[in-house]
Image (cartoon, one colour):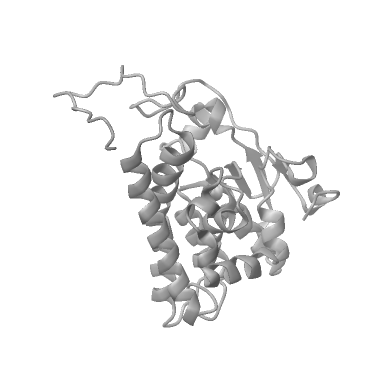
Amino acid sequence: MADATYTPPAVWSADTVSGGKFANINRPTAGARETKALPEGEHGFQLYSLATPNGVKATIMFEELLEAGHSGAEYDAFTIDIGEGEQFGSGFVNINPNSKIPALLDRTGPEPLRIFESGAILMHLAEKFGAFLPTDHTRAEVLSWLFWQIGSAPFIGGGFGHFYAYAPEKYEYPINRYAMETKRLFDVADQRLKDSEYLGGNEYTVADIAAWPWMAPFVEGTIYNEAKTFLSIDEYENVSRWVKQIGERPAVKRGRIVTKVWGDEDTQLRERHSAADFDGKKV
């Protein structure tokens, strides 16, 4: 049976009750909602994030840089609770006017730099340290897969994830629409990974660091309720191989728990200031 038809009004207004998990913080306006300074640590990089798929990109990147011997990549990480609206504090908005995590303050140069959007953070760090982004003829391929992921994430998260897991009512059309697109994206990656060890080629790069946090939870069955079964994720054998391979990297194990504040206590790390913070954690 088809869903009931909704007739849009001539002029949309924000007084419509939408419901859903994030209804209490969603507004059609930008900018700070309260004056609230951000905490700061001693390192050159200050990261404000939450261990969602987008947030994990940045923490994995930092941990990979440190694992590779780039001591200058030491960073402080602080949790921003997006469910409580902390992304709308004035300090955070000053770094990211779009009020989304992750957001980064780079204090390593003569003037502090703000970097927002996960893809921009990955590129900034890759170029700053000359790591995980090739400079030869393979660069274009890596960047193509990086931006493929950046462009694809809204269909998986705000599309499939929202209507399947978070919307107050379940409607057939949006769930089918975004389930189809999510499966298509997994198939794109699966076909690529059939012929290539990593998304960008033979080397592990920012393309993998961007895509892994989104695809791994589907393979592991830890995102959006029963999404793994619903989408038959096990059929993407090459994606599963790639997820497991990258998931064994020590930096990935560390990075995915930074600013994680749910689950077992030994898999949470609300703040990160040094390698010692991982002591006693399940990494």
